[in-house]
Amino acid sequence: MGNIIPVLAEASYIYAMMSRKVPKTPADDGRPPQTLAEVTAMELWRFDPLCIAEDDPKVDAPSDRPSKFRIKMLMRDGDRRRETELLIEQRYAWRGYGQLGSMDEPNQLTMNAELFGRVYATLTVNVDSPAGLALDKTYGPEAARLRAQGRKLCEFGRFAIDPSARSKRLIASLFNLLYIYSYRVKGCTDILIEINPRHRSFYENLLEFKQLGGERMCERVKAPALLMHLSCATIEQRLKEIGGRWRELSDEKSIYKFAFTPEEEAELVARLGY
Image: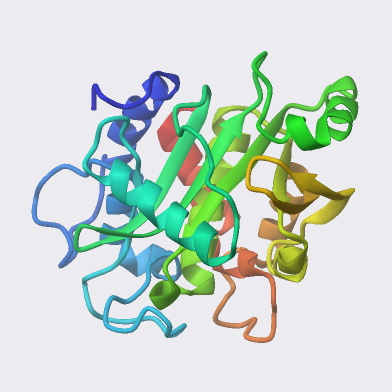
């Protein structure tokens, strides 16, 4: 675990803590879990809605098969780094966006959804620091106002998903785990994300973001952008209301129904030592 990016020094301890008292399942071959997702995959009897069946990634119904996506941290020099960059480049190019810069920004954590050694989805969070956030170049005044209110910001970005693996549960898994890291571990209060205006309904209806800034040109990707905002307190409240209730809330649009229940999240956070 020594090659994990420096800001995640505590993350090595996190995953070690999480590997304790994991019940045996067909997905457990006796090796200690190396990542958060391996724990999730092995505890299918509890966290099945956060895992996607490999036989048909588009199906929302749970599967009894043991092969599931694993959510793994991206290593600085790992084999998946170039594959992750390629997925982002391909999906951005398909949308007509320009290419993003380096993935070596400070206070950054990237999580990938992998299956059989292939990256199917990726999402990154940057925690605010004196270096600022990427969105400051386009929405500096909006971010500055939140900072002036004493808010601790983080920016979600570099979200890309292979078309063959589109699933609300897969998306929920990535966002849920990065929310836990941002809110519970790093103490962030607000999540910001720059999006293309045509994706606004997705972020509003499924993730419950609210528009914070008007449409502007994002010079990084050479495309129009909107700034969307969501407080971590709002997510926390929504998880109390619908977290883990995906079976009984079939008509609910929000993907928070696929997230951990408050009890499961509390157990996870306790394992992290926070």
